[in-house]
Length: 489
Image: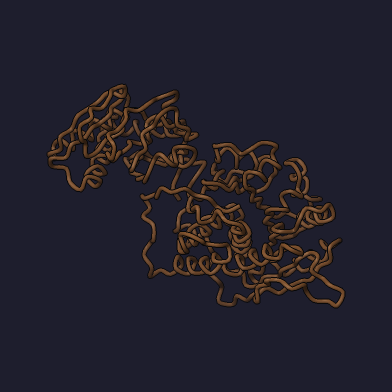
């Protein structure tokens, strides 16, 4: 896990660090880290021309130390005020050390000569450290070196685009408390329980209630997501699939799924009967929004004795946040977590407002309002916990990409989360790790033309790779690649 600290939390951490270190020591470490990154970007330092934009605060001091280190290694370094106009001559690198994470207001950075690489110190100057909003014409960094912990403004809003490649450096500022963390590959291996020697298919069985006549694909995709993420058995129930002669309507049904034919009305009881042997329930994709269907969805969620993933049409059936909270609580006789997985439109239906640019806050609001684990999809997927776990109340997944911005990928995600729940992963972690696996698997597929049906085999492949102790870690812990991200719709 990588800790994410707000500007206030970072300020408190800095204050504690200063009880043990001089401020000059921390500035020296930060400036040295920036200089090292600069040398890597430059491919050496001797004879290179470097411009450093230095503000008056510690961010500027970090830049001055970096410049001094580079000058000692033979670089030709020039320093500029944040309000300066840079000369038109060539520079091999521009170091942006004008303002740090605490900046609020408007800042138009000097224009860098075309083609000049930019290295930002802690955060691109002018970006709000918490919201990620850019207050003016901000320089687009190729690399940002940040210290102690990640900042929300590097992960969301304009900052996620402007920061470029983010390198996290430990300079000795301890992180004793953290409300938000980014999940990593190692978290999947550490939190996914190993299969017991005596395990059997029902030990991790998932019930999937999804699809309807004309929307059969949604049920198939959720089922395949679950089976390829390790569900030992998938029971696929499709309302409206029963016909007079018995059996199922034709459809793209996965061969591995054991199907349950349901009528169009009054089907919740039939599903509840099979949940006695299942460990998790996925409900919603492709069910439709007929009043009778919505009534059965609410009955099923309220009475389910096993963890629930409510997606797509199940979210519409829950109504607003107050109504959803009542359904999730049920009659008090069942105690199981419910995971909600809204995209922005579904979030608006639940909360009466858009999630907005601050995904951390959006996930926290939905979790608090509904009592559910709230996975808010988007460029940064944020999972809000209804109750803080030792201070931790948001888990973040940022492995997704625009490859996932295609129909049906969200159905696969709901199946993945269902499988992780069935395998014994706690609900908040099942949601966050499911989103992480979803994105990491997509990275193994085609960069163009990836469709939802391609994902399940890639999920199995990535999970197999990540659980093999002979495989090297595929992602450097201190590297966070920059790209546009999405976790399905």
